[in-house]
Image 1 (tube, helix red, strand yellow):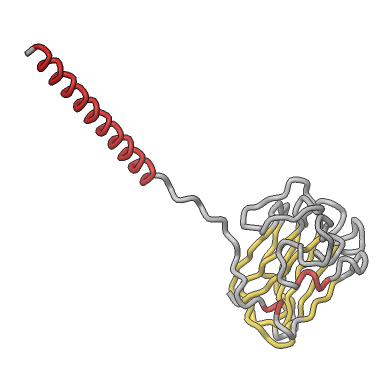
Image 2 (image 1 turned 30 degrees about the horizontal axis):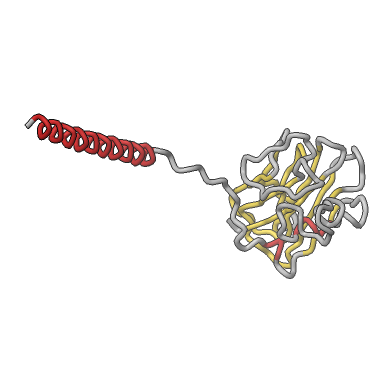
Length: 217
């Protein structure tokens, strides 16, 4: 009889332990589910839309105030490459200095300008400017709104103008003490045949523009 009671007690203890473990695992699983369900979604980086960039249209023509040499052509500022990596080079070599962006040719002399003519009147309501990122010797990141420089190779003070159909330059946006890699400006649309950026100062001697874009909205 005593042996039977002992066996029954052991069986009860095993069942009780198993039930406790099951409840514990279930509680932990539910807690994990509850924890995960209240976590905020990760914020998405903001990349300005690229849809219908007039500067990429076949009839767009770019011109600049000066260029340091043929390795920094004006055309590289309207090639659709915001990173500045659209060039032919062996792996590990930098694009800057190999058609990765435009660099003016007058050290510490301002203003400098870059202009795009469209060949016909366009309604311009948004402009995107991409300037130089810190590290020019390795692939850089796709620039997003809020990304800032550290070594300050970027352009500092500049304004955006649209050449309206009356032949007058209309200022639509400006920036002072800029530290952002990419800037997006929206404004009341202006019907114009060209758009330009005029740079009044830079943090490091030269005006550098990786990409210049114009849109209807």
